[in-house]
Image 1 (cartoon, rainbow, N blue to C red):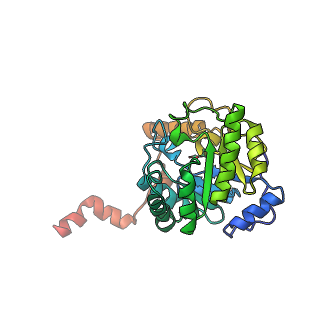
Image 2: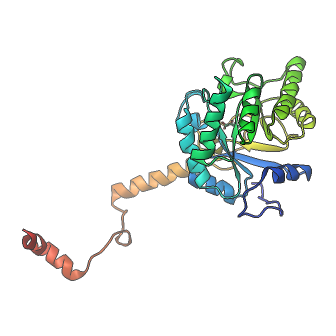
Image 3: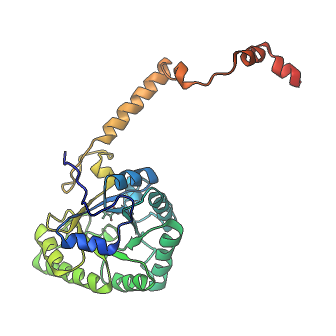
Length: 297
Ligand code: KIV
């Protein structure tokens, strides 16, 4: 297991600022991002020294059990974000804007982003794609909210991309991704997620932009890395994807604990005397004699 180290420059009580994030990358420190969707998980991530908590629309699959991120709604994402923000003190909380909350127009995108800041306490929002997303990013930024970009495999458009597969594997596609990275920086992103692309392409994008890149399935040469909570902690069935390192098997731990609870309930081993409330002996006597009821009646 990797030993956890925190940069000395970070005080656990202070909210990380965007300039600090940028400075840390300048000093060669890597950024740590993890998804979280509720207050206790966000608190644990914050206490562990994670820099950015992403309330990913992956909640649509990991938490809500869907088969893609497309159906998760703005209202659902607001609930997850509010909970995660309540559990966070130092880390930046980035809310993932769900499909449908920013595609139609810049005005729509700004309205949705403002809800994340005002109603849910997000520090920033994340949008997928380049192209038309560029003008949404500019509009949200102009409204005063920092924006994280996301290129490569963008799950909201997985069908268009031919499924959940690595992007940028031809020279032309790789070039396009580098251009998209540059365009996202020009549009005003403070950071860019690079998902599922060859390490060489992610390295080239990281060198081509001055804002931090956060990789997932994009190799080591990014400014930081992100993993999905349930993947990292082993909470999903089946083997993890190629780009995941699983740091714990909490699924098995939780299952064992639940099996032990069920066995104790069925055998009567739980609850014990120390788990129950008593009452003064005299009151118990009166209760058992039925005096309390007869006095009322
Ligand atoms: O929704 C999510 O969890 C994400 C990460 C995979 C970057 O977008």
